[in-house]
Amino acid sequence: SSDLPATATAQLTQAMVKSIVDSGLVPEGAISLICGSAGDLLDHLDSQDVVTFTGSATTGQMLRVQPNIVAKSIPFTMEADSLNC
Image 1: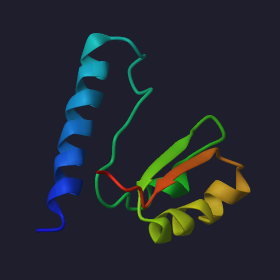
Image 2: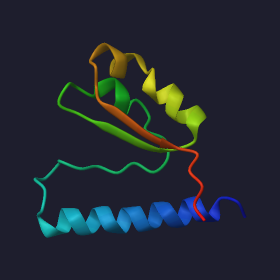
Image 3: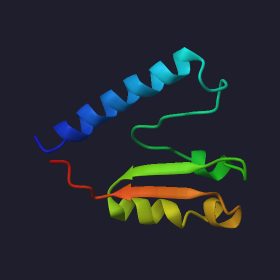
Image 4: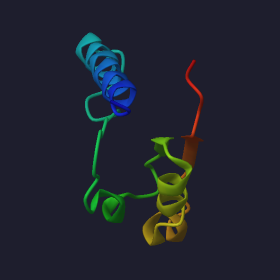
């Protein structure tokens, strides 16, 4: 199925983020991982927040112009439509 690489990537990323959080390398709450819908989370971000997105270019462009991200000049980094060979 075409969703297997994305699912495997999400699982690996979750394990990596958990290791970082469990290690104490970053302060509590300094890193979050969302796999799937963010709901209204983007509406609650503030100027000290940063968004990094990996996924489709179409979804990334929709997120980049989200009104709160634009209004508060929240840093937004996107890696989209990569070829993973």
